[in-house]
Image (cartoon, rainbow, N blue to C red; front, top):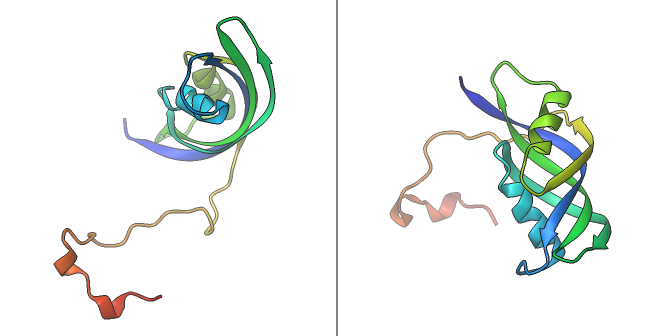
Length: 125
């Protein structure tokens, strides 16, 4: 079955290993990127944290692009799929975001494959 991506505003709690490289946001992003249905993690905002012996519990608000079956899935199923991810402790909120012209992506034609195919005079600055 074909899958498409849909945007969701999500509030959740993840477990970031204490020895993770980068910032807490980087560690939380990596936890979410490993979840099967997550395609894109956008603008994670830390709401709270709780240090532990081996990890840090991080509360986040984040916009996610989730890979959803063509027939569409409701937010309850999206929540269950997120909760099944390793490192995801709880999912507090899942709100579907409407696709608007501001956040829609449209691909037209084939992209150039070499610099020679670009026409400098057609590039606006």
